[in-house]
Image 1 (cartoon, rainbow, N blue to C red):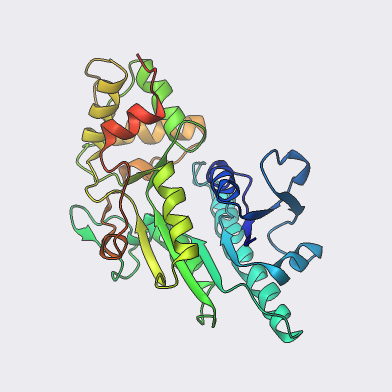
Image 2: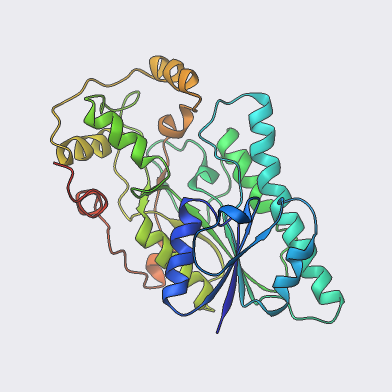
Length: 307
């Protein structure tokens, strides 16, 4: 039975991925700060994302690693939060790499594949320019996070590595979508800023399927954008969301007002004001089929009883 290590796997996406791997008769080992809270399949081991500890023994017979570790970026952009966002990502990559290299030095065999999560934030604010995987990192804090995050894997290790760069993951059990759904239901579903910024997204089922494909398919190597082929503008995204929940037009929220509101609730307005027209060029070229390529179908699956 194949065994996969999910580092930082006790979050929204990690739980979904663990269940999918379990249904496919794979063994799941989750590395988490709070193993006692793990309610999913397989087993959970304690780790802090920074230091080597007994968890590293689980890598000895593993068939792959998926690293999802990182502090939630939906927080106030204070200096302390920004430093923790970066360190939580970079440190987890480095300690996993240290563990794998230690295994190699002791004569063991490292997991043959490492799937590392990043984000479309890699591209920064690119306006209406189509962003495919060969583009270099952009500018701004979101791009800096991803550049340092992915850069922690350099120099490239000898085992196969896949970097997934998701847009916003649409699902009912976590991520940003529950907040968007609540505010839309309250009549606050207007677009952010000018509304013309591209807003890449992916349904959680497609994100899980893409991760499973990255683990299983030996031809997958390097970076892959994980988002639907035609990202909407934020205005289009919110229009479809209002329509799904049966809500009328709502006024857009100016960028300055949004920044003030996000600060008040402890979030970061750049997550919705940054424009990134990311396209999953490499996944499409590899023949990956999106089950939910359009937002109305994704919302219907996520909130089937919305009205």
